[in-house]
Length: 451
Image 1: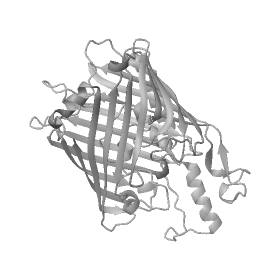
Image 2: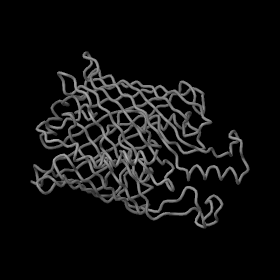
Image 3: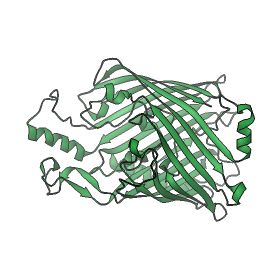
Image 4: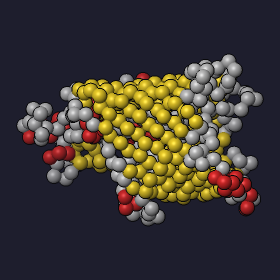
């Protein structure tokens, strides 16, 4: 399985130039999930928004909530409706008009999250093992308001080179081939967040990144970012400090926005390196199992993480280029010595405008595969051996996870431009990777209001 995934990712990277075709058509990612925002609930805000736009200030203010209810199965079968929500402000201030610097801008993101209620840990998974997926991807582990990013960016070399610096987040530059439309975390965006060394969306660390267009379709991305395990803590929500930093992250990614059969697609392959010390999940510093090693677990000064995938439109409605189907695949492979999620792979189908009467609605279907690190599983098993526990129902037993499969189907209904209602159904096979946990069915509902 691992060799197949690596081969697939490498094949996608190596065939980027072959996929690229000379085209006069502009690349349109609407059917891939990257559609332009419609008019918000507040409209032009009595003329305030056009004035802001005229002066280079553009923003998106949106409210989101996600509900999940366990219909059947899971670790705890008692019924529960889990609820989380967030309000997010993302903005850009154009500086080029005032300074003459090409593409100069200030970018920012502020997110307020509430209701720390996650069905994954409340009902679906055995809490004696680390969770490997989320029923509500926007769950952040705490209720807080925090700075997602605040950066300065500009371009060079006739806009071929883009540079960004400041308190940044990886989603600004890296692994942007997939939207975050599903409610399962394994289907939200690309797979680079599963490296567990940087964060998605609303957590900032210091860094700088570069994007260089090798061709109009092919972009090389790299940078240097702070690796700080404390970045997601409440104390760091607005901090400018690097307190807690353990080292640096160096990503290298190749991204192609191209056409296949005259339809747009986006492909990427990335490598993430860190020199921050990572602990082995099984081996001790003296050579034996770390659970009984007086010197603790072995540490590594260098670890690697690979990710990649594609998102390709495969059909187009006869009279509307913004309607059609896209197919996507994304995967990651980690160093399983120190990362308890070894392989993550996900495949999705999306269709925008399936029904003539509802051209702006979406339907999505996705299936993900999650493989647990054998170092993590061996450590769990060894802890049972030294305690002499073989009964899974014993509270002190350490369950031994393997692989799991999760799936989701949803329909996104857009009655007006500023409102999205997205009911869905999730299926969890071996939640948490445990064969002892019943397969689970979960109903979900996501609501988005754009202001």
